[in-house]
Image 1 (cartoon, rainbow, N blue to C red):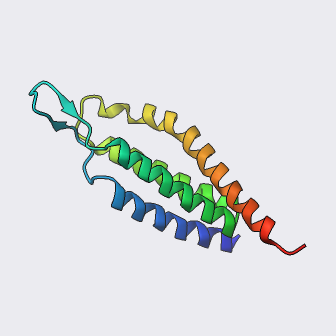
Image 2 (cartoon, helix red, strand yellow):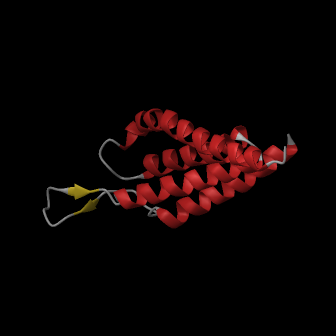
Length: 129
């Protein structure tokens, strides 16, 4: 149990570092050339980089301790960081961040669980018979 929590804490630190490196610090919309049009500061490339990084972290967590450690150390911190950034952004409808979180949570948990299971499978397939 203690090892799982320690692994989850390391994964959470890695998740926070990845989040800090990939995403902008402010998710408020930015104006474009058209004064009536605003754009999101988070690009699709940033979402893709974050998804790839979270998958790697989840795979490492699954390899090290299993699916539970990855869910606790990767999925939970990522969801909390998403909620925080969404709630603090100055945009119209920012109070709807719980809806975004409800839509993100199942996909995030499923993706992390699958990546962690792949990591766990890789560890078991390397084990001597």
